[in-house]
Amino acid sequence: MAVDDGMIVALGSADEIRRSDPEAETVALDGWVMPGLIEPHGHPGFSAILLSDLVVDLRPVVIPDADGVLAALRTAVADAGGEAVFANGWDALLQRGLPDPDIRFLDDLAGSVPLVVIHNSGHSVYFNTAAALAAGLDRSTPDPVGASFVRDAEGGLTGVALEAAAVEMVVAPMLAKAQQHLPRILPAHLRDLSSRGITTVSDLSWNPGLDPLIDALRAQGAMPLRLRWYEMSRPGGAPSVRGGEDPVFRQTGVKTWSDGSPWVGNIATSFPYLDTPATRGLGLEPHHIGHANYTPDELSAIAEPYAAAGWQLACHVHGDRAIDATLDVYAQIIARHGLTDHRFRLEHCGAMTPAQFERAASLGVTVSLFVDHITYWGEVLVDDLFGAEHGGAWADAGAAFAAGHRATFHNDGWVTPNEPFRNMAVAETRTTRSGYRMPGGTVVTREQALLAHTANAAWQLFSEHEVGALSPGLFADFIVVDRDPVTVSSEDLAATQVSATYVGGVRVV
Image (tube, rainbow, N blue to C red):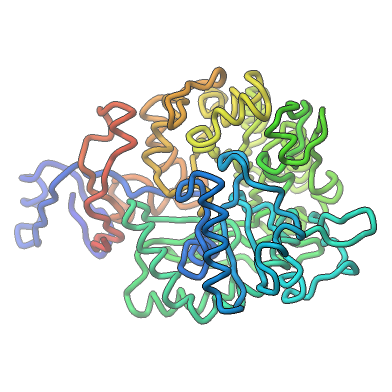
């Protein structure tokens, strides 16, 4: 492979490449070379904070049991010296035996120390009275559009907030505290992503206040990957002006939310949650069916100004009813504006059916699947939440490819570890980390799995003219791995190690 000024200029045998430029510097690479991996749905701006030393890491991948979670919280409160404690990763479905984290429980645990605990999904947050005061919240605080504060019979706060706009209000003090640390923790997080073979990451909830920090990293030659970002849509929001083709850092689209998280009970499905100890522990009544964050008219009113301004839309959807409603809105917007190459996105697609994948493809809508849900929550989806019919077919990547999609996979920032090779493997086997084979859904081929984190992801981010393959005319973004990713078993693919990462022909890890 010949590289000049960061671009691939030729591919061929060693002799052919040497003859083309006998004076060129030669670099020998020890391992298998493949295109750099692309994370099409990440949150590096927020993940840098949640995964830093500013936040107590409670995630099930770190602390698997309830006793460990409670011990970590008690230790953090005792060591806080009265300062606020922020924790992330609470998951009652995997950390069995956790108590109901309402305001009374957290008041008893932390007293006058402000305590905020973010659910592992990021779609809910729990807080005590001191944290409510620190964030300026009380019973008179109105619910933001598309989000809510859970209240008791008298209208008082119960210490639970649901969905992004309300979560943001609770964690605002944490974000303010983190500002002075971002020059340290954001570059460290980006380097970690790069060490995992990720050469392009997309942020689906980017904070433009971080732009100067990115500019500084670039000026220092310390930007270890490319970043594509999505603006968070707001009711009544004014879209920014589209423009620029910066190959390192640019806005791609706008993020919207149709429903919530399966783990907290607020995804919009046509079928009910099961009545199990797990769902009762989540506070769900028998035959509970979740609801969308917005009506179709509300979602359309939020999304259309951005689409009319030329931006790609990316909408979080899990439940089949939410998917139908979102596709209805997309279809109306596409027709009204005569859009042809819009590449509107559906994100996560937990309960999406084969027919819905086919409809999406017919509209030119693309999908990014959270297949790693299977790794950690496969048994939970089937036995505790939705049963074999609906839970068993969760994140059906095979159906997406069968419908003609250039589907992609992702890890959603901090929710599961950023390990793209494991995503590929689980999409091939639909098997959990304990060896349980999902009773529904269809597997993908190795070619499809590799494309999901390379060429397909580049296309989904409108970057296929720059990255995603090893081809003349594209940037020399590639990685060196310790095994042949085309021929090894699924189990070995998941364990692939990255020994070097190159961005624009320059080694960054």
